Length: 323
Image (cartoon, rainbow, N blue to C red; front, side):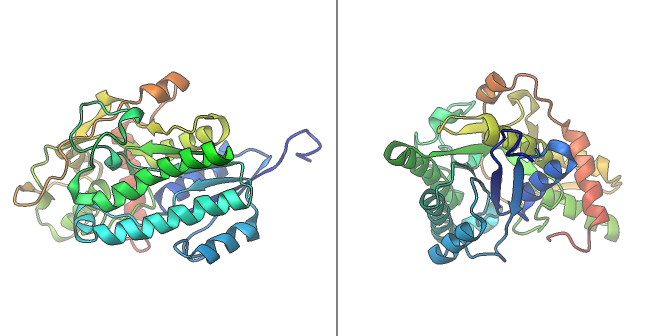
């Protein structure tokens, strides 16, 4: 049917398909953003060990994708990164090299990989933009993960220059939403806080936030990011990466984020900041000027609404949520 209509079918393989962003893409595709000429295949670490070159190649030969969204990675919050920088480097380097090389060897037309704003230099001017990725070392707390992610950009350039491949990458700011990892020790700041508020409500205790609450972040709702991923896959033709983020004016402090969660979950207890705990980077403000050049009218979900939806999902799915 699609071929008769002049459309060449796309087979889109999503690695890391059961994670935060993979689930969000699956949801927006299912909710009407998918197209009739697209077949979506979501895979996880249960389908193949992407640190293993043979298993990765076999996965590509099995599914024969024409397009890939590469989300699979070893990820974790600030404190997990500090402890395991070497592991983050090695595992992610292996995963990324295997996925990109299998994509090249099996003739994939386009790969969109997912980077992170933590890859940017620690000492930099703000706002950061796409041209500044390699201008200096990343923050020392997660250098292993950051350098491994930076290397995707190097490989994309290499595959394009040597083989003409259309491999690109997106750089989202702090992503959150349903299906996140809500682990308090190893998760990211927002889902960790949601879990903490949930528990504090259950026990009637105070809510303790690690650090001063002063660092500032741009948070992007996973469902908004998913819609932008579809646009990048279908329309964005540059090899150079693109930052996917709310505007600089929508940056919020950790304190403001905690207060939004407190409000969303109707928490009535005390809010305490444990200033003996590390803050991490004070800010990593990113410019979304390039995104706005392409999509001037894209509507982001308001932060408090997105927090409310995420809190509601976590409360409803507490038994099965990653935590």
